Length: 351
Image (cartoon, rainbow, N blue to C red; front, side):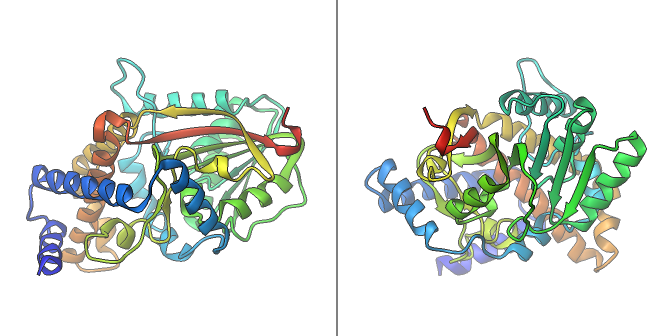
């Protein structure tokens, strides 16, 4: 009975019949339930990380890659141009004290990423999972002596980034269309950067082993992930309440802050920083506001390949996605789910 009620409420929500305040209330209830499950499933955060890491080691590099890519990225580029900030950064922005504009918050996180990754002009840089090119284009413009290779699994993203390079006169950025799970290169890089990509992979041990082979001996890897403060878990579709896994994060995981430390055979963490989740909540709220402001312009984009009713449902799902993420990252003041940054180096260089 509960399952049927949940399915009915989700259908109402997707049809746009439920007000946002009620959706937010329901989301908070699901988050509370998620935390209760995590507590019941493990005796301690340390054991939860160790057990999860060991389980992932024995599994595939990633699952449902094509579904996840289609859910997020094979969407009309004009949708993201309307919803994201001017840099098209589809990841957490940094809202410094007094910040009110999404564009500036995007720039602040791009600046912080370059600082923490210890980027210097003239470096050879690889970005894995470059999205719409916010970081790669920033690097190409601000580090003109550097050579940047950006890997994306989306043809529309590559075309967009290449058009931006041509418009801006940038010749130091190459875009490769390839699933990162299948990507390989004989080149070695001074820096490899990954922003919100590790969450799509299951076997981080294997991923880090491959990345280590692309790093120069003195090279470093910078990783930006969203995560839970203690307990990692998979996004699994076991019931109708697993809406996120079904619609936006098929095959993905929620890492914990300490998860990457478990995989230190090839690369080890040199520095680690936490970014309060409120920053991501404010980012999602800005995306939601932009979507609502541009709703009448966005609806025809989704109506090109389907009927108007289905197009409205698709747009409403994006609204629900932004609402869900905002509530997730603001939970308990942004200290329960947050963003973590890591600077990693070859384990052989550990002091």
